Image (cartoon, rainbow, N blue to C red; front, top):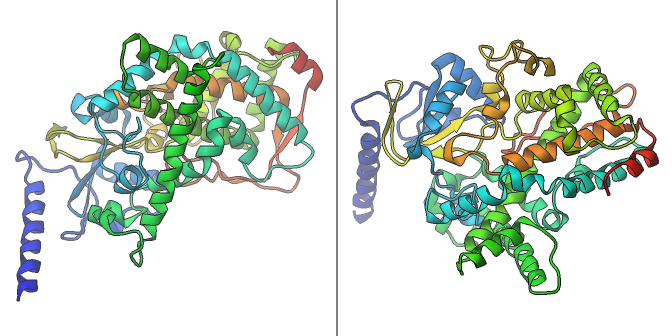
Length: 482
């Protein structure tokens, strides 16, 4: 009898919550796929590459699409104008809860997933100072040196085709972070895909003991949490140790700690989590964009020839390009923009969360709604980009240039990517160095199709690719910065 009463009370509670969420401000929810009572449209949630299905929903239902996930509201913004106007609001500057990635894997304190609270504001303030344009360009020499290491490694490996991106990933980013972070970031990228783990739909599952039968996700989360904490703590403590010694190389971490000392602020958690967030939030998208660029060059050899002719005209084939050359490389700059438009590194961005009831375009968007901007869909919007399926850098040149993806690919509002300048600088230097040094091709008889991973950070799936040296290697290194 008691069990029946408990079940009835639980059912009544669920109904009350469901009805409360349906009744918002007297306005209708945005249109979207139909669903079932209580479950909502869970069964219609895309299994992979959700951005493609979301784009179809935008075509069918309009700029603003709503989907219910077991009583939780999800809103998808499929047009640039809608995403810009709505996500620039201060009341849409928080993040939804991620029971798996945030709580169990330990990412709730990172800059990417932290809610709009004092901890996040402190991280944001520090990164705005030390990841701003002026500070970041001071690191161009470090990136130039890293690009030399990258092309040196690629030259040594050029005798045989590549079948995976591991060498590229290991060279992009600080090595001290890479060995600690690489496996954790793969897990995190998967965990951030909505629907990857049942605990995200049923948050109470996170309280199940790790030893409980079927609780593999708890053990998986605990192991990843350990890796995440190492990724954040060990490099931070390494820099602190160097600072207490005779010398410490320049770094964002050192700059942040020196600023906290000047401000007599003894709370280092903001600096620690901010710098710990930078690898995944900054370098993983650069790595993803580089794989997309390599794929695009294989599929569009005439574009590759044209951009290499421009690079040769600036460098004379006697050195690697530098960031100071950018004003003389308009076609190359357009190539980078087209790469970001054709397949954004994070096709759905990182979702926002409403902190109050909102109205938009005559629709009700309830508090605590999860809001996605379909960046991939924006890049394929035919009302903005002519022939959006085609890879054409020329679209960003001349008086009729189309909208630069830099207006949207790095996100919107207060949660826009703080590493934008660093990502732009890194992508420029790495891409220019590779294209200056190598012809990118596939082995004879190989046909390549554009295929991408379904992860949050979406990269081109590996395929056999050759990097054929096209310059006098020793001469190019001799003429480049040390």
